[in-house]
Image (spheres, rainbow, N blue to C red):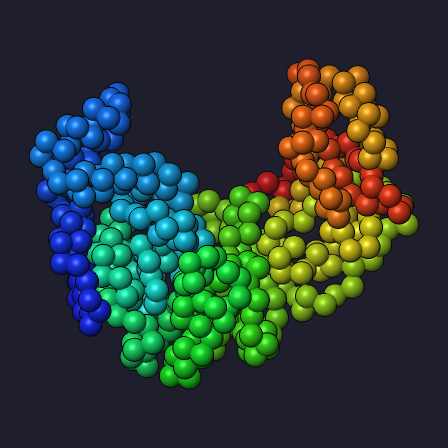
Length: 413
């Protein structure tokens, strides 16, 4: 079935703005986008060339798209054919995480993506069956529809530019929502300050309980959600990208926590599940290897689950660095072979690094208050060798651990 665009809105909107966005995603803008992407000219000369035939607004849109498409390559392989706004690109789910999430939704059944933005999750949902994208900004809806076409030309897609609070959700098998975290002008992790907030989301859940709510990893949740939802923290490339609250039939283990690592082109490569209240044992002494859990594991509070699986222990209470006398192959763990341990004294540390010819230094810290960039300058690094410096409290004092990051077979993403 071909893509359908049913854009309805009761919101006031600048007609010229919509015309400009419709033009941007049309074939009429394509020659200008290609010309601007060719490079080899200064922004000033390119702007002057475009302004000879385009309005100031359309000139800006063309130049902006070229830059946004370049920045979007890390999130979308189809970025050169897609359309973005700066905020829309920043907030969009990348295609690998979106595909992982979409696999939980019922195939070939109609679902809804509320507050769909420029369509990162929407495109993935469109690949599995009928979907409607809902966003109260009609211009953003235009971009979202074009982006779905760019990755799934035969998608069964509808668009609605309405406030999600007024959207009739009951006829859909499940739904996804990405509330605006900047509703007050500044980003916040407090869900009650999101737009829409918990009251609207709970109202939608009352009509259709099978839902996924996308939030920032550090979001502060309503107490009821902690018990009713399965909470999943998802990372890619070592960065925790989002927290998803799965409700209803989409939740596999309601009331539990999940940490999932997603890899480019490979989907989920590692998942841990637990309550987040498990006890983490503390080692009696520092061992040969230091381990750092993946960001999703840390955010989910599942370090103890991971440690128990591999018989690891914390180096210091309350600090999520683990230790053991053997190498552990797990994509959820970064492994470091400990080379030297000394009190955190800048002079001693500088002398040690200089003696070893360290010119490239990865610096990590937990539980120690230090400005890393200032420290890097003070260490006066020189040489061709590389190593890792890990700062943490240990045995009652700030400690510097010099270690080599090692790749354990079977652990790479």
